[in-house]
Length: 86
Image 1 (spheres, one colour):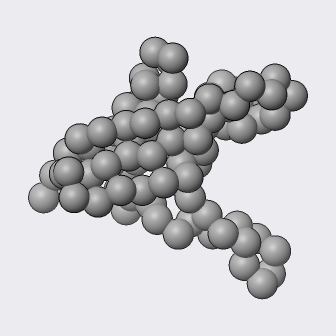
Image 2 (cartoon, one colour):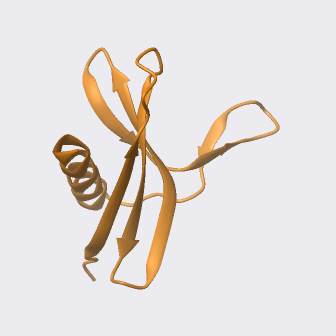
């Protein structure tokens, strides 16, 4: 089963010192929304981080994420394309 990303919304951060450049939300098949997807700037360029929470061990763990590389790449591509259009 292939999903379709039917909406991508991105809100840029204006603080140039922050590594988080924007927060995004995606809608899947007009039925399911994932909020708090972060766009991070690193030495290797921009990348997408799925929503996560800090565990009792102090490490962050994704609370929603794709389970295969193809879907992860599709989400990252669509989110970064929308970010670059702003």
